[in-house]
Length: 206
Ligand SMILES: NC(=O)c1ccc[n+]([C@@H]2O[C@H](COP(=O)([O-])OP(=O)(O)OC[C@H]3O[C@@H](n4cnc5c(N)ncnc54)[C@H](OP(=O)(O)O)[C@@H]3O)[C@@H](O)[C@H]2O)c1
Image (tube, rainbow, N blue to C red; front, side, top):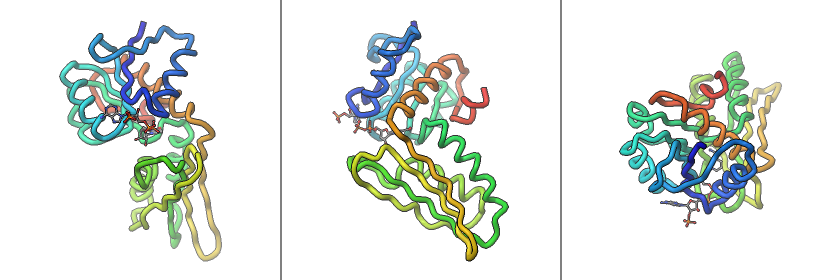
């Protein structure tokens, strides 16, 4: 039996993960920090993240999060898994963007669309894509554009534009369970890992 603690369990992502675990054929139980856990999944807020990370380091417990700060330091002591986006599609988009290194005289722009309740702007995923794109094309990029409305789960677009042609890479999440599945898969995988810093790239290459 694997014991998982979920921080932010009452939120949109937390509820999605709870539903997924209740339907899972694997032996997984959601428990609270006080009862001993194999891994902690955090989908809450920067404050929730800080508090939970401290707890995980103190109690030598594996930690899966969508926040990134201080994780490198913690990774010397516990296994940590970070992804600004737990979908397989965004991991592939990151790989596809590498082709942009061959483009000359192109302008680039990242756009992201999310539901109107989303608190952060630009999204963590857009920031990560921007960082990757900058490494790939090695030029100054305009800030990602953020659009908020309705109940959009998450759309990310990466534009490459020249005077004669445009290229667009687009990823749409069609539901929240795509993130929940990725986070749960990451957490079950992380339990078996030694202390270190892991990301979607490590999960997918295993
Ligand atoms: N990496 C990914 O693939 C991915 C995908 C989707 C979302 N996200 C991110 O995940 C986070 C949560 O998203 P969401 O849509 O589920 O948000 P949400 O619906 O607002 O839920 C957040 C939950 O966290 C709780 N919380 C807030 N501060 C806390 C604290 N200090 N300690 C314990 N619990 C706390 C909230 O409780 P109260 O309501 O009582 O405050 C709420 O239940 C956001 O940062 C979002 O950007 C990441």
